[in-house]
Length: 518
Image (cartoon, rainbow, N blue to C red; front, side):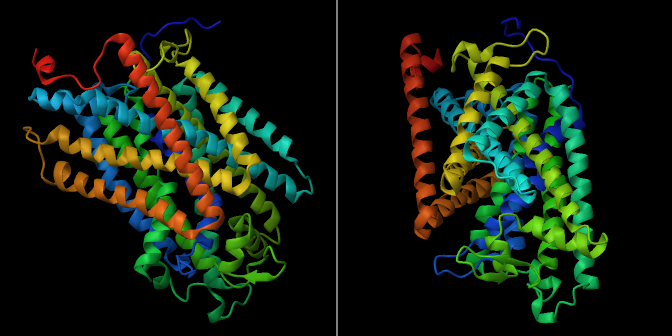
């Protein structure tokens, strides 16, 4: 039996532990497999493909991510006592540390808005990953002729959610060990895949004609083709980069949070985003040719980027080509190895998101902004076990909806999580300006230009995703509307609890200036 208490967590994490836990959430191995098809199939409002700007779109998204990461790192350095609160704590302190009562009075409202966005991100995101895991298992089983019915896929989602919760309850140290193993396996596999993909193009074992390659030359991959295409691709690519900020929720478990949390935020993005993503997406695009063949929904055969757009696993199809060419015809086996690493990466991503989400909930419960039950810690492992149990249930439900509802439902819950992400990122950039403006340590670049540009670009990303989604029509628009409904429903629920609990405790949401001056 777990003892119900709300004592302190154990400080066990060094820089490596902080970094790998954030890296696990970014998980390039999982997202290369899952999002390459979406990026290959993306078209603008006129129906023209934006796939030529896949790599440059990632570069644009990385710029936005790094601007936001710098803001997170600066706030973590200024507020090393944030503990598990992360962005939620930053929001309050940024206003409370101001001299004027007229500024400090907005602290609680800023804290609520930031907490709402963080919860929309971290409490929906694990459910999305649970659904992706069930889809992946279904795909792998299908390669062996095993058909898993919808009820079986839902069962897989439920069991996977429970497995991740079991690991999360055992503590961040155990999660760190798993994250290290996952990252090593994932990065090693991706380097091997990327090298083989580049060799495939250079040696051309299948005799692809010059016109048969999707990109005629390496410069075609790394140079932008169309500004609108780059923008559309960046709205997808930014979705694969979230997670670096999760390090800021580990303040209570970091040995030296002031030093290691800011470093972990930036290092995780450099290793996973700057290195892994740019390498693997370059290699995959470089090896893509008309030898990649798939069957469209209408029964016609398509090749090249068209095949990548309609295949349920284009990276798997490409892995088969590479394995057949360089591994003695063992392409199918190589594809299964890649698929297995993707499954492992999804485990790491879900675990990291769950760890971050329950810790922010724990911080809010300690602050009496969420039910007390979310602040209970396990007697042995010192983890917010009740929060984990509740998140397991929520993730299983969301994952089941994503599996049962098909592509539209899965896309809808993904977009809802992403909305929380971008709102959170925009708020953090704005809070950085509030926290440092007029202080002794203010830097015009780090605390002025960088967060302001980050704020504007995150807002542009939010608007672009939803404008493009609605303008695209069809199932894409349906998914976008579903995301808006989910997000609005979560906001209404959070707002009702906030107002009702505030009245019950006689606590003003926005205190008067006179009250703050006392």
